[in-house]
Each structure stands twice: as C-alpha cells, then as structure tokens.
Image (cartoon, rainbow, N blue to C red; front, side):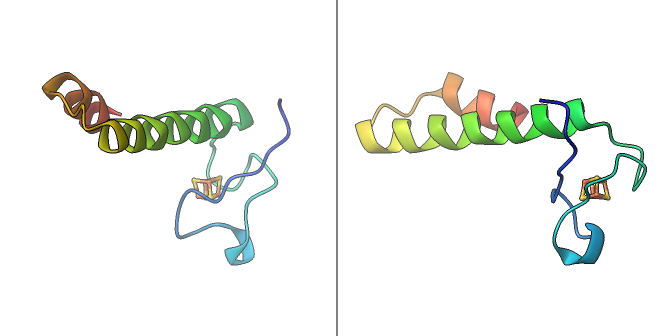
Length: 65
Ligand code: SF4
C-alpha cells in the first residue's frame, strides 16, 4: 500500500492524520511499516502476557521495536 495516512505524532494534520507525504518528509512506505511494527509489537506483548511466557528475548524485542 502506498497511500499516505499517518497519525503517529502530535503534529498530525488537523489532529486527524496526514494524507500527504510532504507534512514532515515521512514517506507512505515508512508510515505503513511503522504501523505494522507497532501492531506486531502489541501482538507480541499481548501474547506473552496472555500465555505467561514472558522472556528476556521478548522484552528485548519490545524495547528495540
Ligand atoms: S506524517 Fe509526519 S507529521 Fe504527519 S503524523 Fe506522521 S510523523 Fe507526524
């Protein structure tokens, strides 16, 4: 997906979301990848908590992410 939509910071357009890549220079691909990263990190955190399998490796992945 290359359409721009980003609401990842406090300067998002109109407090709703940037739909043009020229707001801060972030490209749509970057915004999409960052959304995917956060989604996967949330899934990892929820899974480790739900299953009670929290590990140092999972913690490091979350911190690095
Ligand atoms: S495109 Fe840039 S300015 Fe707009 S919400 Fe995302 S990070 Fe913030």
